[in-house]
Amino acid sequence: MSTAVDNTSSGERDIHDPYAYELDEIDVSLDERFEKNTFEGFFERLRKEDPVHYCAESENGPYWSVTRFEDIMKVDTSHGIFSSEGGITIAEGQADFELPMFIAMDQPKHDEQRRVANPVVGPMNLKEMEPIIRTRVQTILDSLPVGETFNWVDKVSIELTTQMLATLFDFPFEDRAKLTRWSDVATAALGTGIIDTEEERQAELIECLTYFTELWNQRVNEPPRGDLISMLCHGKATKNMDPMEYLGNLVLLIVGGNDTTRNSLTGGVLALNENPAEYDKLRADTSVIPNMVSEIIRWQTPLAHMRRIALEDTILNGKHIKKGDKVVMWYVSGNRDESVIADAEKFIIDRAKARNHLSFGFGIHRCMGNKLAEMQINIAWEEIMKRFKNIEVVGEPVRIRSAFVKGYSELPVRLEAW
Amino acid sequence: MIKVTFIEHSGDVHEIETETGSSLMEVAMNNDVPGIDADCGGGCSCATCHVYVDSAWLDKLSPPDAMEESMLGLNTMREENSRLSCQIDTSDELNGLVVNLPEFQG
Ligand code: HEM
Ligand code: FES
Image (cartoon, rainbow over all chains, first blue to last red; front, side, top):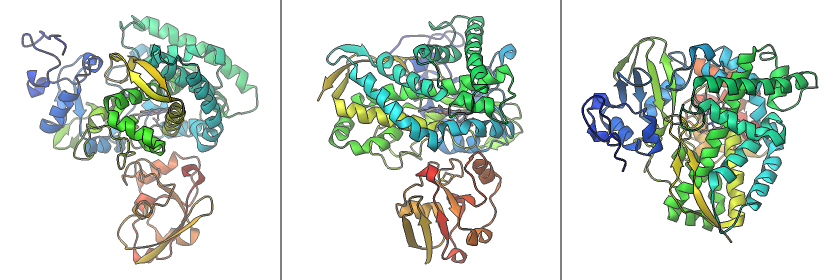
């Protein structure tokens, strides 16, 4: 247990202890608790004592936390009351550098733009991508050093998701590391080793825009194809996008498709190690993999929250939410809600109704790439199980310091072949 | 009891006798009809229970509400006869109902 203390308001106390606080002092959005993996107790307490919780003061201003499954569903599906316009994380964007993207738009514009991008992860494209992704997964797995300690995040999770993204954009393969970099830059908290200032972030994202503008200019003069850039530059609703909107949509796909899948790939290895009986189940019968993939995505909850702004006064589970209030849906909490998910704290790979989790959100903003994500993770586990009897976690995971992107930068492992 | 028929994209036919009252999605789930995931459990918020309703039956259904309309509207493979099966309540009036399952949910 960490000994970090908070002496801003009421003397020294352990910031990782949920009961070191009065209820109304609880701010579940501290990045540090996600890094130290101590956030869960706070949500457990809120689900029990104050499921729709107001926090008057935080680094990100006042906000409501919605912590139970059913209430989250309600907010996520009431898009006429709870708006995504302008941003979907608890943090405030930079007013002078707002990236417009459809995840952060309301109807009708959201729908128009989503419909254009949608086919890129549609069933036809997925069918075409399947064998490409499988071959790439096989190549990556076959190159791993059996019997040596290495970082699973770098060698597998990042590599695999980056290659998938490169496929999605038909991005020059040799430059694919740029995609990972831009994804990291777009979401990193300042001063955590990736970027130090907003100016740096903007500069790198403009670089990203420049690169993709060149790809746009090439593809706009070629016949339409199945990659995302071609779809955007030929699509009726998107072909006149302004550059910032183009950048916004790129960043959306890069981030949406990258960290989330990456951290599910890492999370699965960790979860199986923490639950050896489940790992045995998997070894005994790999037909459980599709169900396990849903369970991994629930267990990991790669995006801890999404935020909304109330468009009108409304009542949620007895609480009066005012027009303009910031409302944060904590998927990471709803996915542990015992009133909807039996044994919610347990990782059970053959769980009944495993698909019924919140990690992809619900309603009009429900993850557009969920089938692609599931397909990738499925392929990864199918190919892993053909090769390795055991992926042993041999050291502590290093977690990302973020209350939004819930994931890992390091997971030291050692492989044992069959 | 009424009879409802699900036709998979592959052509496989599932004829099911069912009590009335539950949603068409639930009928499919309870009888292991493949191709309906129902990720949201009937909340009209995941659109993984999409069906194409045989035209003979369309006007027997109440029209989609705003939420269903929104969810259907995002799908570029939506047709005139597209519905979310969790929003169709089985009733005596629907005895004999036939729906086709979309390829994209296969
Ligand atoms: C396990 C992996 C993934 C998780 C957990 C995840 C999670 C989410 C969540 C929570 C949302 C927002 C839902 C809401 O606001 O209600 C979302 C939206 C989105 N995701 Fe994913 N995602 C994953 C993978 C992907 C992939 C692989 C792609 C694309 C290649 C992708 C693209 C998108 C897009 C475009 C949106 C915006 C949808 C909209 O606003 O209409 N995601 N995702
Ligand atoms: S079950 Fe989710 S929309 Fe019908």
